[in-house]
Length: 334
Image 1 (tube, rainbow, N blue to C red):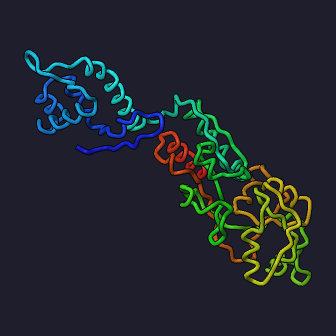
Image 2 (image 1 turned 30 degrees about the vertical axis):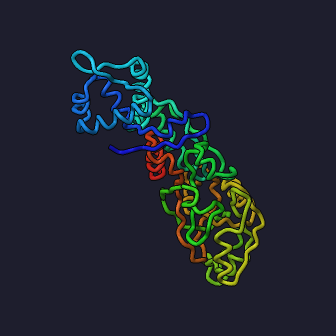
Image 3 (image 1 turned 60 degrees about the vertical axis):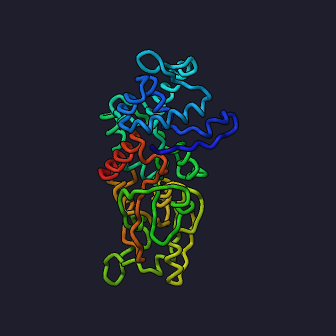
């Protein structure tokens, strides 16, 4: 039998430090069968193993527990007093260690908190809510802004169930390395970058010589006034790092926490926004003004991964696992 040693802590009886949990299983079998032979058969172990466990139980409790009687063995008064507490403890422990009950979306009442940028709110959350209304009418969502402090701690505590974060290769985020804080991630989709300008922006004016729209050069791009979306208010971003590799700098004339604010500013000014390709779908969906134009970025930029992040504590939680799958499917339907 395996032995489990429990280190005594403040407030616990000293003898608990010497408890082998298997002894409690043997005691329960002996109490039910009142026979070493039948208890051994019940547990599928040898009689000598049960006899050895009984000796240890007697030493631990300071009582014979089972004594010879007519037709077999009988429980002592001390043993009779232990039967129900030990049996209840084993049942409680068994329930705690059992496989968690499956998550039943149709009848579940639970609130999940997602921490995600506003673009995810606009493009994915509507699909997610449609799915919830159909499959899990009792499940509620709370969307919190990405600027929430101590995100890794909140994920670990279960205050935030899932976070959605963009990740650009070579550009570290503001959070600690994920492995160090027990975070896991799953890429929902990848996206490339583009530039968004207002229709009629001087940079889009046709060439006087050819009458065709001019191609935005890297130097002309860097010379424009830019708007940077930074949920945390921090910077610079990956664009600045890549421009620096080319010996160029840009002027960030406006820094905002949300893409909706950035698009509104671009629509009414000569600012340029560099952002994910999904921005081009917003005007078509009626989520941004029609007077916006998307063009390629004149800068070689890696693709951006949109990751779903959670703490490893909740990987095997049935409800959490269901939520991750539903979010992933909603992201695919955006």
